[in-house]
Image 1 (cartoon, rainbow, N blue to C red):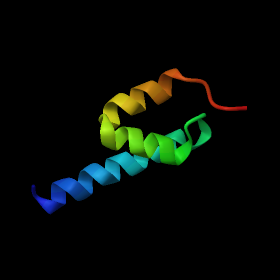
Image 2 (cartoon, one colour):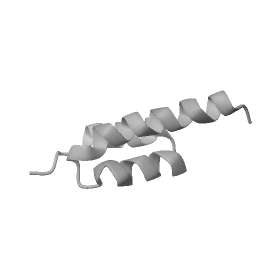
Image 3 (cartoon, rainbow, N blue to C red):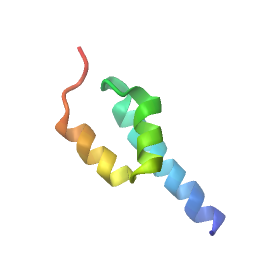
Image 4 (cartoon, one colour):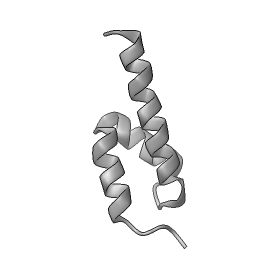
Length: 53
């Protein structure tokens, strides 16, 4: 695999992780899930869930 593609993918996963920092999963959970699944899937899921109080 091209290293630029891997870095770009991990960058997208990190951005999704930042979106998830105020959710129940937190940054780490959202980051790991976006690596395992896809950043788009996790981002949509984060948009549909409520922030933690």
